[in-house]
Image (cartoon, rainbow, N blue to C red):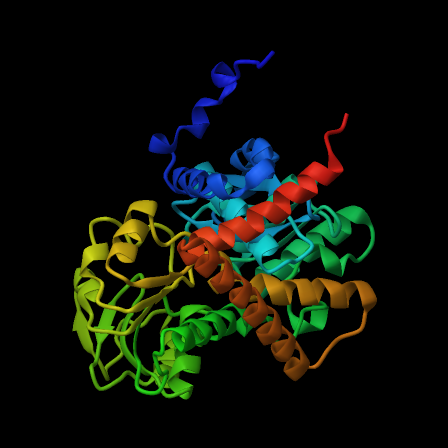
Length: 429
């Protein structure tokens, strides 16, 4: 007898009301026909294993109390402990964190790391907090989620608006609560606290690596290629500098404060220095300022969305002039936009493979912390390039075999690995 489970589906699984989580659910639906006998387990992918919502109260510098809402979601741990970043942003929602945790499950499995997927965040604008307030917020949040994180349970890392210092506070807070130093509970830490060389640039380096692999298969030479980048931080900024160093030409850049264009090419290194000093590309003199909307009309060969999710939509996908889109951000392209880009023969290298460089070097950091033996930066970069290249090659072959997009191909590989592990482990109790 087959049970009717439709009435048990939670209301939060309605894709029409869920933003990023709804996008993820559509992506799972698209890959399901390719899962074979493992499709019987597919509901595992559509429900997070554990979602924790916490109140984060802190005392502000003026003596008043403020409360912030925080999250930690563990999507799947069939292949290993949860792994994923923590973001501090004024628009963080449960839907977003759920989707990001699920994409981490797919990403880790696609690169074949021994991790499941997790993600965390606090709904806050960190720019409004003093350093002391930011530290108190971080430590309180870490204590609240401490019941589900740990070096063999769930390992946070930096994400939007979080950095090495915030990771140091998280590691210290967890260690103090445990009564012993635990460097392996957090990755993306300062080098002095067990961090890894090459970690800060790893995501951008991974974007560059798979971008070059995709361009090679398209017969698109990097020399002279025109590049547009949205987001100019550790992902977009690093990737842009590597492409320019390889002979590319950075023609457009956009961030939260401004959009710039220069057909002759923007000096990526000079712009990077400007951002380090001023916190934004705004005010950079050696490029033309354009409207945010005009960025999507940029004549370019490669576009790298490296900011936030849902940036390329059905409203602007038809305007993109690039031949290749490399997703540095998580979930920057909606499923509807994905279809439009494919119909226009624009190749999309999806986030779940394109930006996996960060978590790959986080894995290296975790391994180094456990062994207390640290590798050289050259060794780390070489290992990163090898793993990313091998993972992309497998995705490319899968896409050719099934005549599907690179995103669907990545999901086929990753979801089969996740569900195979789920099947082997069985259900307990």
